[in-house]
Image 1: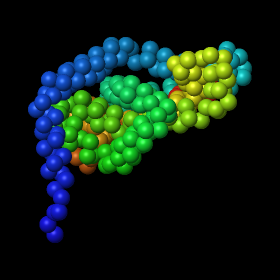
Image 2 (image 1 turned 180 degrees about the horizontal axis):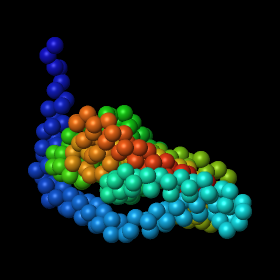
Image 3 (image 1 turned 45 degrees about the vertical axis):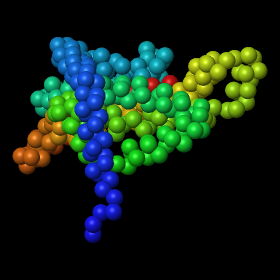
Image 4 (image 1 turned 90 degrees about the vertical axis):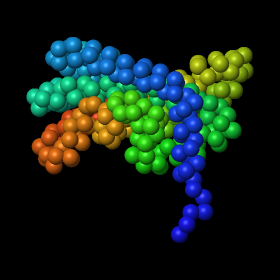
Length: 286
């Protein structure tokens, strides 16, 4: 059957126009992301692995134990996750994938920061404006339901191959939870609390930063947790466009039909996911 509307052709033409008219912008974005990723990789890899393990272990322990960190009750809360962090990271190091784990973590950090820089302000806007919410929600629906592989096509077109298209595709894929949960948290702040703020003469800015955001903090942190996990779930797909890390090893295992390589690198991703998930959950609870 012949096409009645060649929508893909119009989208391709639009992307071509964007690539040609904003080539300087794409080049600048590529330079900034590439430099940031490489700088963080070099910085983390310059630190002895045992120091990083110790720092992450202490962070995980303190996130769970909190103010009770040096008491018996705090020890019971934090020791389980701390032991998992030690054994999990030592396992990654022993399997020989420490460098790739650092590269994966760097990609997740950069993508998460970019997603939050855009997602939280958009969530605030959507929460405070019904018009903005009506516009943003369908876009988020599209971003969440579109197959992740589709994001790689324009990313390659604008940025060639390497870490940058992987980061951009990861940002697009992981952005929606930051927007949705920020908006949800602010909208769920009780109206009587906001009215009390207005009654005491608070401005809209003060209402936002001193009432709505503090009360919505737990929901926003849950959104950050989801952004991190979605970013980590994209590392294998991002490796198809040249992104480095454990995802690239998984992809090599698929191409070479190497079960051992695929399983070991996949296990490394699982360990990182559990560590990041448990730490961010603990911070959100606090």
